[in-house]
Length: 155
Image 1 (cartoon, one colour):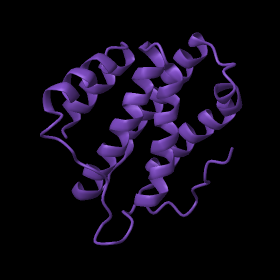
Image 2 (image 1 turned 45 degrees about the vertical axis):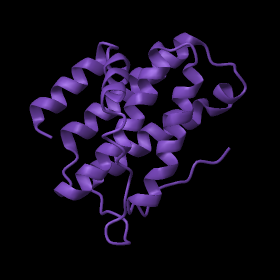
Image 3 (image 1 turned 180 degrees about the vertical axis):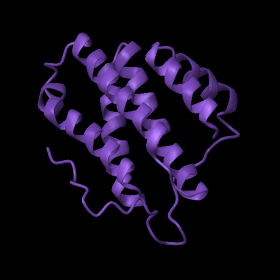
């Protein structure tokens, strides 16, 4: 994906419009686009330092709030603030992460889940579901990407 498309996606996320666009895109291409994360011929994909940093920052933000989210003590305003912080990390990843094309394509599948989660935290009746998508993406990350310094989510 080109830098121009990254910038457009980032701008849409920051304006809170991404969840609407993702929903429309999913509806339009649901049957045609069933891509799933895959390993690199049985091995995890290599990462760069910026990927570790961005994903670790998202993990840390989520972990700081996980109990309140789990026990329904997290307000819609707090979900919005968390989603905006996640979007900042996504912007960082789009700008700094430089993976080979095949690894980058797999990363985009993972980041799409994070983007959808962020969008749901910002604009749905059940923002907790958006946080659940983030947790799922963070649990998928070490399965497919070789981040030896990754700390699993514990709860």
